[in-house]
Amino acid sequence: MSTVHLSAITKQFGKVTAVEDLDLLIKEGEFFTFLGPSGCGKTTTLRMVAGFYYPTKGVVKFNDRVMTTVPPEKRNTGMVFQNYALFPHMTVFENVAFGLKVRKMSKEETKKRVEDVLRKVRLDQYAERQVSQLSGGQQQRVALARALVIEPDILLLDEPLSNLDARLRDEMRAEILRLQKEYKITTIYVTHDQVEALTMSDRIAVFNSGKCQQVGTPTEIYNEPVNDFVAEFIGETNLLGVSEAGLGENHRLYHVGALGSKVKVNNTSLNVAGYTENDELRLSVRPEAIEVSAQPVAGENVFPGKVKLVQFTGAAVHTYVEMNDRLTVVGTALNQGPSTYLKEGAEVYVRLPEDQIRIVPKAGV
Image (cartoon, rainbow, N blue to C red):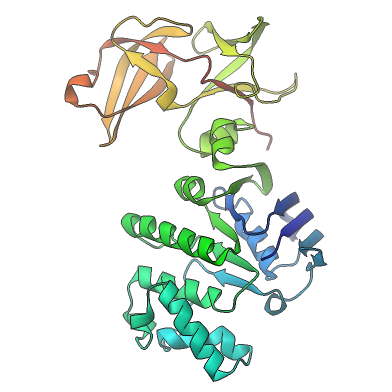
């Protein structure tokens, strides 16, 4: 196992800056995820860790060893690609053994290692089958086995589940996590899928436009986003433009322009992110935190509205409420049966709990 330290990393392709001034320390044995939209720099960063790209500026270290310009074959990393990159003319055994053959390992040791890793990925009965005869999920396991059999210090996975259907993705998430825990290997995982990131990671780095916006645990990223980009990219949220309107003993007041009213927010670090007087501010409140009721609601931050749309998703019901003819907010509740669904056009009350609101600055470009 290794730590990975990226220090002041910048990568440019001509005049385009793909990654800018990145500092990250990935701990030994950690499952660390690079998360962000397409073109944000996450795969470029992974390729700099793998050695496929060298940074324009900065230093890459594994433990205390500088690896910035060390070629990929000398880094002892295992890579799983988005398209698996298997050899279709080879059997499962031959695909998995390929890396060991390149390393000139003995036939006896190669056979032992390949059989062991195939058992761990539950493909030992398919050893002599052509990979072209396997399902997508089985091919994904072959790619994992090929990366793991060389006993790498670091496992790198570049959107490995994006070609699988939803049910198979769920199964493979669990499989990858099981193997990562069993091997206790430092793992860097690239995805644009927030569910994958939240359910699999020890920590997450959120990327946008070549810059790392925030690093934290899944609960930190979800509950304490540092800006509106992170709040909106991780899960669903309602974002409202606000400005400071006063300070109380245990709370702050913010004016919501679209509501033409003030809201009260708890004055804690959980509810108010760091910002400067020059920042544009946003109020973020998750749909599951909003209370929508046909009856008057007690408490702070209660506003009238009208139900615009009720959206049934199975496990949950999303209620879109129009407020002040200018603003629509979404409230989400667990499905408790049709008798609890609000009707479109119904007059309702919306409460934005002061302890569930997060005030964040607008992200810089």
